[in-house]
Image 1 (cartoon, rainbow, N blue to C red):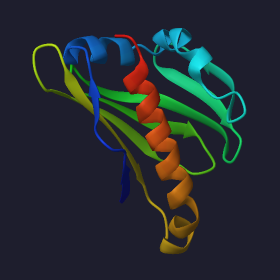
Image 2 (image 1 turned 180 degrees about the horizontal axis):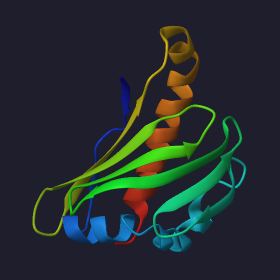
Image 3 (image 1 turned 60 degrees about the horizontal axis):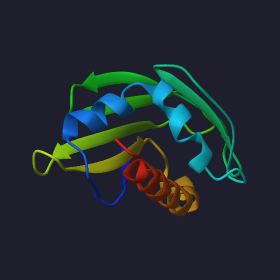
Image 4 (image 1 turned 30 degrees about the vertical axis):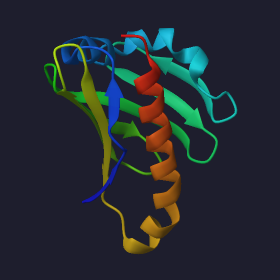
Length: 136
């Protein structure tokens, strides 16, 4: 499995507060306006899944497949041109701050990886930046 990781983001909020907000996808309503409209269209979601259309990739549906309270949220694709998994890892720094990192895992041949690695890396970084900006 190939993994693509975001840089580590510092968040000015306790680990469990970040986890609680991110583990219920209904909270995306509060950050919807921060998404770039030219890149992300038709965002729909419920408590455990989200569907987006992105300019370069197309329609993607992610479903929460596992939660480890206060530490990790794992997503799997249920609809995507390129099946992948996404992990949101949350690690405490102090009682009032934490670190966040995103990881994409996918099975892909080296030829395809050469084509998708840069867009995936840029996308995961932008996603991590957006999650770091949320008010928890």
